[in-house]
Length: 169
Image 1 (cartoon, rainbow, N blue to C red):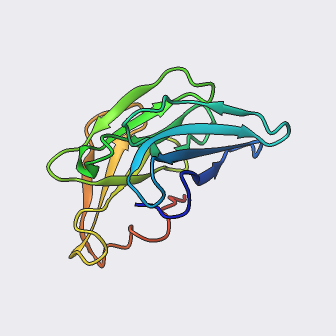
Image 2 (cartoon, helix red, strand yellow):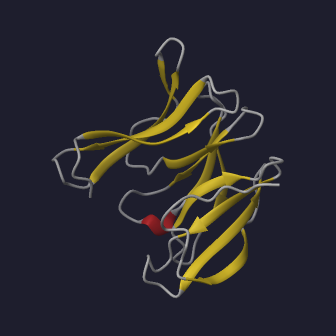
């Protein structure tokens, strides 16, 4: 539930060249009610022009990141009512090439995908259990898609629920 407004722009990410801002927008039917849809957008900072990249529907298009070369935007996608139906998807900044890169299952609640600095991998955190759980989980997915590899298990205190994950060299 979100109590700020019927439409919200969330989690902006700068393009690698600093000229555009990608974000996702959520909708609610009733203030404080459940999110009924979300879509990805890009805003050109020089002109203010906005481009919608994904359709409004019952998907959970959110939590995004730019590839280091600026050719792709990855994001979490899935059913709004069930965060454990997460998919890692990507789309080009012009709205073409939408594809699913990885599917998560077994109760995984994936979020906050981040490219590694070299663009070879995408790291995806897991909200399993929430902030009071025994720990967080971290997955690596090849940047062109493939099976998620869970490489960090039960990290104490689930540090991924707050703050951000940003791989560095």
